[in-house]
Length: 132
Image (cartoon, helix red, strand yellow):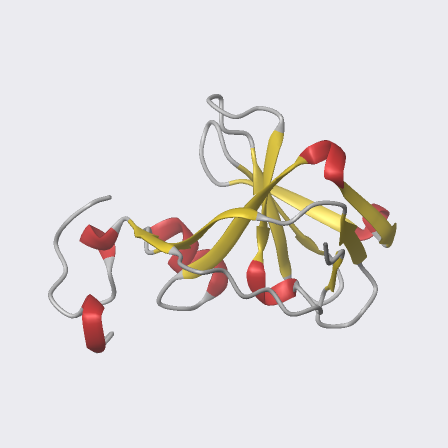
């Protein structure tokens, strides 16, 4: 099994995952679009106990984007690192896939909140109007 490592853009925050991330997802909700400044955000989930910060955990800032979701990001460079707080999965955290420094190649990823898909996004998302 590959132990995955990741970091923020400036390198101040670094972490490792003790297990393979699960349930890779591309989220098209408006909160993720605004938080990432992109058409969607890509995440995968891991047990909180399997996430270890190697450096810079004290540099993580947090923001509650809704009543149940807390997002954490590097206070120096702004890189999004994780979100958590789902009442349904309190022991899990979702890591931004773009923050991984080691290759992570899932067999598939699910797209969610396609009703909010960016109107300028071409390809399979164009005209999407279903929520999964």
